[in-house]
Image 1 (cartoon, rainbow, N blue to C red):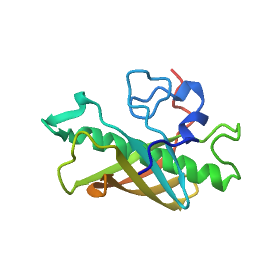
Image 2 (tube, rainbow, N blue to C red):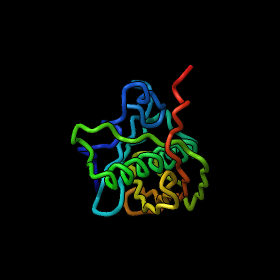
Image 3 (cartoon, one colour):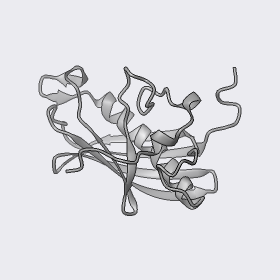
Image 4 (cartoon, rainbow, N blue to C red):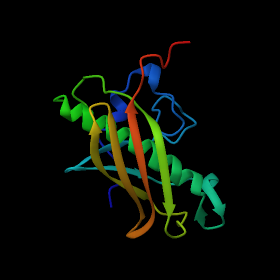
Length: 160
């Protein structure tokens, strides 16, 4: 099982947009999800902490929703970055996406003490809009799936 993404797209987000509770590398209290390529699919691995408990032994569903959400926007960023001729870690600032829609389906209870693996498949549906379908596994068990429609972050974001 994948334990860590070495070259995550989140490493290439500008500092002003790296504070997301789910995937912001500068949010020390957040999850700091890291999304990268595995062939033509995207992956994020994450080990839930004890505070992510729903009931003893099982992960809170909101964590899975956050994982699918940030994995989806990170995957869209990876796809557009690659389309523009870049890869994570090449020193080029990555495009940022926001979630337009999020749909989650829980398929079985998710055990607490297992590294989760999100695997994404990307479909471009517009030059600035991507649909990412994600499956979440705990070990080899499918626990949840989701679909994110992600759009390029508008220029007005981050301007107060």
